[in-house]
Image (spheres, rainbow, N blue to C red):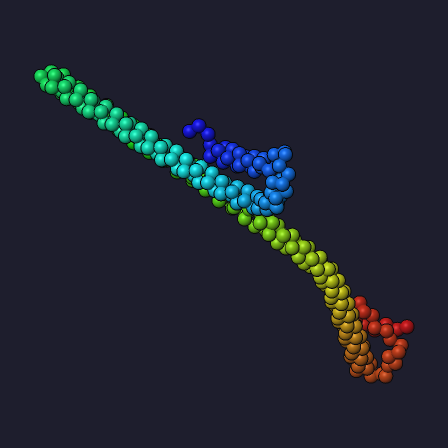
Length: 268
């Protein structure tokens, strides 16, 4: 392909525009022909803009169509080349497998009577088994590593969520503890005030009980003193009566004073 469709369309449009821009009416010396051709030139100029626009759109559509065709062709060629390369690679791999199989068969045929055949076969099987086990172990380790990574990621996310929830819970507990501390302080102050009032009441009760005990003791003392005075009066009376019986005389009691330590009367 020598040139693109867009360049060809632009060159054609430029050629046609240049052809219209140089009319044949500008030849000098033919005035009559020039005057009769003026209306036709005006008509051509009026319609040239629309024609140019229509032709430009047509050329653009044609250029887009050609470009799409070229791209489709390129894609088809690329897919064909890719398919041919894949086929060639597949044929090459099959050929290599066939060569390997043929070589193995030849060596197997050559070594049929070899005394080391059994050991070599066992060694080959052992190597193949070890390789298979190693591949399985590596796959298992990779799988375990991926599982551990996923587990660690999940644990990190859960730990972050749990820490956030723990922070919220600790804040709530701190708030509750502060409220409980305030309540306990208020209760303590109230209990202290109540204790002072109770102590005051106890002191008043104790004072009242002391006064009552003192009153009772005073009453007991007064009663005992009154009883003692009565007993003393009765004793005096009895003493006077005994003296009257002994002497047969009337005694003036005012002249006698009873001694508390001695039972006998004394004269003043």
